[in-house]
Length: 192
Image (cartoon, rainbow, N blue to C red; front, side, top):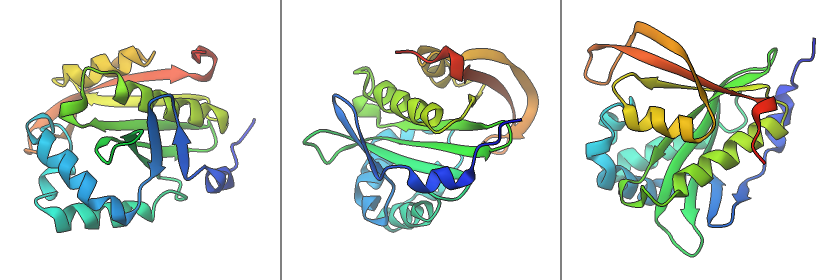
């Protein structure tokens, strides 16, 4: 059995670049850009568990500061994406819930509503999935509220496959029971 070394996450780069984007590991000073993403995208964040707690710039900064402590923790590797030459945060993305014995993790993603439809969030998420595979992960999963068709379709565009639905698996941010759609992409399904 091949087990991934958790220490590998300590060597994850601070910055990743793609043709159009710069991805940076989350820092406390990302707070203002993160607040702008949340404010502009509020109508689209109904399925995002942490969104109701971000009610102002100080909350956004505290959120970024807390998450900045997580990059080398087994439960989270968090990046934010900016278009080259811009201070607008395009997306907040993470690889989380690592199980190093498989090895596997999950992908989380939130895009800035004004940036949707340009492929920027897809480019950023694809970079994180590639990073996971480069570090030895065999399986990257995504779980989406079954009502969140946009999120499910996004994962499908990333090359994920639907595995099934977990019925009444958790409560949504409003407290209602919800079903989760499980999707995954395997290492051997990497796209060039």
